[in-house]
Amino acid sequence: MQSIKEAADEFLRHQRVAVTGVSRTPGSHGSNVVYQRLKERGYDVFAVNPNTDEVEGDRSYPNLAAIPGGVEAVVIGTRPDRALDTVRECESLGIKDVWMHRSVGAGSVSQEAADYGRQHGLTVIDGGCPLMFEPVSDPGHKMMRWVFSLNGHVPRRV
Image (cartoon, rainbow, N blue to C red; front, side, top):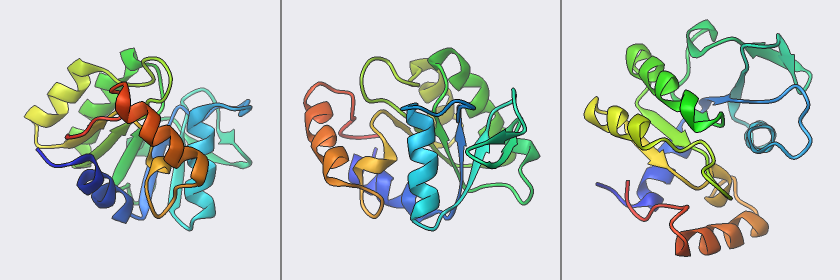
């Protein structure tokens, strides 16, 4: 197992990233925040939402396989009961880096999905948020990282 910092650094080195669960009605939805921040920081980011063709003014894809040219990493921002299907799709497409978003509550973390991914050679970050780490972090997310590390919502090792 590697430290969360090492795994986050590796994940954020990828430039083509999909974010699942990006909502048509963004508000303060976590997936939308991650999607927009990665986009602002110059990532080639793709929204995945099977219920719409457009989110945040950009094209949305029904699944990972539909993204032209594929992606290198995936942020899972859906309910935990959908995470296993996403991790299985990552494995079938050869995507090796997966991040299950979590801040307050269960977030998108599924122990079953994390175990499956690890058993199939994927690096699975099961908690926290990519925005808690450089080069995409901000002071608020850095503070949340510290707090959520104390309660286990940000894993120390993955």
